[in-house]
Amino acid sequence: MSYVVPILLVAVLAVGLVKRVNVYDGFVCGARKSFDLSLTVFPYLAAVFIMVNALHASGLDVWLTKLLSPPFALMGIPSEVVQLVLLRPFSGSGSLAILTDVYENYGADSYVGRCASVIMGSSETVFYVASVYFAGTKVRRTGWAVPIALFCNLLGAAAACLLCKVM
Amino acid sequence: MNIVWTVVTAAALVALTVADPQSVLSVCLDSCSQAVTAALGLCGVYCLWMGIFEVAERCKLVEKLSGCFARLNKFLYGRLSETAERYVSLNFASNLLGVGNAATPSAIAAIKETERGERLSRSGAMLFVLNATGVQLVPTTVMGLRATMGSADPSDILLPNLIATFVTSVVGVALVFCAYGKAK
Image 1: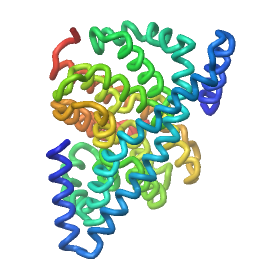
Image 2 (image 1 turned 180 degrees about the vertical axis):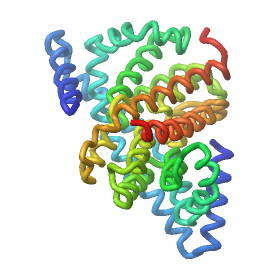
Image 3 (image 1 turned 135 degrees about the horizontal axis):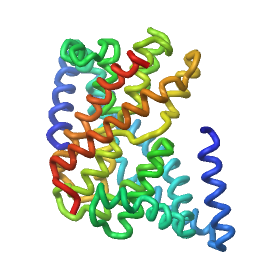
Image 4 (image 1 turned 90 degrees about the vertical axis):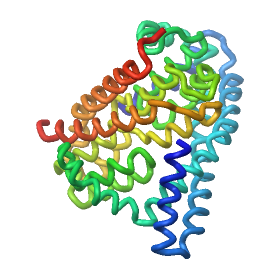
């Protein structure tokens, strides 16, 4: 698997060479746009980070975790990973830190550790993606898109815990 | 987003003020500088991939890719402009590869192409849901972390992960069909 990206990079360059495209010029032109893109994204990142960090620093996330553990248990999600499921839609780096904690406390090969791995791998930072993707557009009302994505992530977490039990 | 962000942030800030009023400003400021760092980091990632994608575009590779996904795109999105279709295909391919953040530039470009008004269109919703349900074949980051944390077999989560991803994506697509109707 570790060869996929290197091969891809070399292949694109090689095709450019064969087709006599100005590869160097193309790369520079494409790369130039990245600065504008990250500038458009930046204020949205700041907003999401303020929300996540305030949530974490106030201890509100721990309180929510406690509150939501019983209903999550009904779906077969063990209490050890509830915090991960809750934080995952908001922050990628935050949920990665929780994942590391889970590995440290319960072991990477334990049931809880494997659940957490699959939850992490099969879900996405929904709010983060929502703020970044719509950054350059006029879209203000996202309708059903965010609720559907959140529901799917929750479903994915339940499926992950179930699958880790049998596999 | 407006309501979610405002309500959650306000609630968290109130709770934080009660618990530790001194830290409110520093938490907010830290978050903003964290955003600066993250934006610069993303800029680096985008720089590499947008450069490579531009080269692929000029070699007409993206056009071919879009040809491969034509039927799938037709089913998922209905009629799209040619440019949008290209970006959507590129986005799908980079998601499958699972390289962190490589899918973002193409998704933003596709959404810029499909969205005109304030209300998110069906195509935009479909693209968003597909990206947010994590169509990713190999969870590279998670497996790397497991390896460093002493897992005997870091890749034994591959199959359950694949199934879980598949389930969420299929349900996500189905729900978009329910909420927005069939592709036109």
